[in-house]
Structure formats: C-alpha cells, structure tokens
Image 1: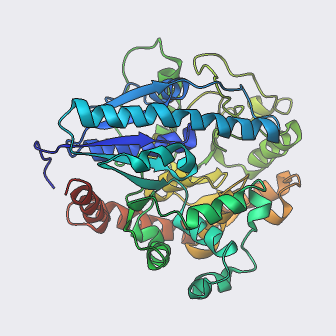
Image 2: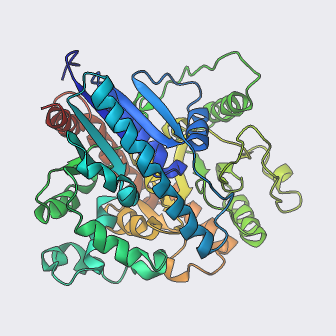
Amino acid sequence: MAANSNIDVAVVMVPFPEYGHQSPFLHLSRLISSYNIPVHYVSIGARNHELKLRQQNDQLPNIQFHDLIIPEKNSCANEEDYLSYFESLNLLGGPICEICRALLISSSCRRVVVIHDSIMLSVVEGMISIANVETYIFHVISAFTVCSLFKQVSNDDDDDDELFLPLQSHMPSMESCYKKEMSEFVKMLRHWTFKSGDIFNTCRDIEGIYLDALAKRSDKPIWGLGPSINHVNIVYNHNHTHDDDSSSPDKILSHKCIEWLDKQPKNSVIYVSFGTVTTFSPEQINELALGLERSEQNFVWVLREKDKKGNDMTKDISKMELPEGFEERVAKRGIIAREWVPQLEILAHPSTGGYLFHSGWNSFLESVTMGVPMATWPIHSDNPFNDVLITKVLKVGLVVKEWAHKDELVSSNTIENAVRILMNSPDGEEMRQRVVELSQAIKISMKDGGASKKETESFIVHITR
C-alpha cells in the first residue's frame, strides 16, 4: 500500500511505561508512520529517554515523543509500592486527553486514533467522551496467553476446549503467575467494550488459531500486526560494519559481540539472556556458569542486573560474581556481556544456533523470526504460558525449568543437559528445522502480498477510512 499524502488522521500511542511494553509500541509506531501517518508517542519522560537510548541513534521519522511526568518510586519493593505505582499512572489520563484535543483543534486531523496498552485501560477512560477519538487495545503478550487467561476467568468458553484440553496438564494457573488482582483485571479486559478493536503483537503463522478463537467472542475487529521487531534488521549482513565512533560503550560492545560471532562455526553458539527484569541469586548464577562450562558449547551470556526505574543506562552496572577461574577457563569459547547487547543482531547471526531465555514474548518473536530454537526458563507473568506455546504447541524449543518447580534452584547438570540437547542432538535438530520453516513463513507473510502485510494494510485502511 502506497503512503497517502492526504491522510488526516493522527495516532497517539499510550504504552505501559516499562521497556518490555514500550519496545513493541515503538516498533508498531514505526510501522504505522511508514504509511505517512503522524504518530505521537506518549509516556513518562524518563522511560522515553531510556527507550531512545536503546535505539542506537535509529531515525524515527514522523514520530513525535511527548514526555509526561508523574511522581514515581525507584522500585516496587512490595505490593503496596506496586499498587501505588499503578495508581500514579492514572495521572497520565488528563495530559493524554489534552494532547488528543489539541490534535483535533490545532491540526487538520478529523480523527485521533489512540492505541493503548491493555494495562492502561483506566488511563484512557477519559478519552471515550471525546468526539472523533477512537481507541484500540494493543496486547503486547501472546494471543495464546490472552485466550488462556480469558478461559480461566470464564465458565462459558467450551468452544476453546479443543485448543486447551490436550494441554491441560501443562497449563499454569493464573494465580501462580500473577498478583492476586490479575483475575479481576482479566474479567474487566474480557468485557471491555470501550474500544474500536484489538491489536496483537503476533501473526497468523504463529498464532492463527488463537486469533480466530478471540475473534469468535468479539464484536470488534482483531488484527495481528506482529512480529513487532525492527524489520530493518531481519536480514543479517555478513559484512556488518559499525560506526567509527568508539566513544560509545554500546557500540564497542556491539562490535565485539558480532566480531566474535563472525569467527564461530554456523549454529555453534548458544545465546543466553533473561531479559531486562530478572536478577538471579548468586547460587543460581553459579549453577548456570558451571552448566555452560560443562556443556562445552560456545556461548554469549548477557549477565547483568535487571533494569531499575530511573536507571541511567550510561552508568556502569554492578559486577555480578562468577565462580573463581570461570572466565579464564571459558575465555576462548564464550563472551560474558555485562552491558546492553544488540540482541536482534546476535539472534540473526548465522553462528547463533540456540537461545536460552526467560520465555519473554518480545524475545520469542525475535528468536522465531530469526529461526533460532529455544531453551525455556520462565520467570514470571506470561512467561509460563509462552513456555507451553513454544515447547508443546509450536515445538520449537525445550524446557530447562518447569514452572511447577519455579522456586527451586536449577542445577548445573540440568542446564548442561539442556544445552547439549538443544545444540547437539537429533531432537535439537528437529526443533531447529521447525523454527527455520516457521521463520521462512513469517518473512514471506511480511512481504508484499503476504498475509501479515495484508493484515497491516487492512488496519491502515480501517483507521484512515
């Protein structure tokens, strides 16, 4: 679909202000703005700053950032702080309404399209009464997870039995994954009518049957507009080069990781990273280190503390201790990265043959799009649901840590065996073949004439109608 220079619609993005939510919102913003539609990205100023730092100077044409301020704590150490943080987000509602009104008054907009995180329902409630504003929920978790959660809070979803009965022994309970308030929130989300449609960060090649199941129970349109990753980086370039500016620590680290991968055999390296909200105990780090060492597998291991609200990404991250002599013993076959790394480039590299991770949805989408099989280690929230989808439905990965044993230490032997199976076994090779086939289908669907491209065009036509 060609960009339309006569579009008189503006899009306002309202993500939940945490990186795992903001990142897919930014990628969706890129996609929408590529159709010459102005996008206004609205979030807490500090979160916007961190988000832009991670983009490594990527140009973001047609996207305007609006930095809002609310009182916030540096951490959510207990449940009271956690709830207080969510309540403080409601203070964003007024300023976002003003942005929408200003767009309708001061520009040529005849409609403002608000795309908001499912978590931000109460924040956008005030926009319902503004004429010529329509809202869409963007779910940054899998359709499989949403289906599962809806089923757990409902007694009348018998139509989904054929999807979930075969998985019953593997499915986690909502209570084991989320705080106690989640059940009431899911009920509210399931019956939320103040919307013009739902968007999912997925595609039909990955989750077609679950998108269809959700569409059956909704009278509003549903689109799968994912995978929401930076599409520019989908094809890896073996002649990858970096800017000569050596003053940036991020660029130095990026260069070192990719340069090292360039020297390794195809599919010989396992990438190990547990996202931005996980910090392991010293005992678990010790077991993980020993497991990687004993596997005799090449690896890139991202070892850093979880991101903290207000954390300055330019400051050094405190060094997490490893077993004595470990770094010297693995120096020739492993990289231990203690800062941000270019994850998508690493997963896209031909030398990367496996990914040991926390079953986060964004990371899964990057891995599956790049054709990399996975070893799953769910940590919290939607991770255990994704784990079932990855290992039992799509069968593109194996389980390292069972959710039923979530409070137990994972031994070095378990880690060693999982890495060996994923990287050097017939079972691992079958997973690799399945994920490569799925990756190829996803990439084809994103090209002109493909199913994902058509779904995107359908959404653009709808909001610019």
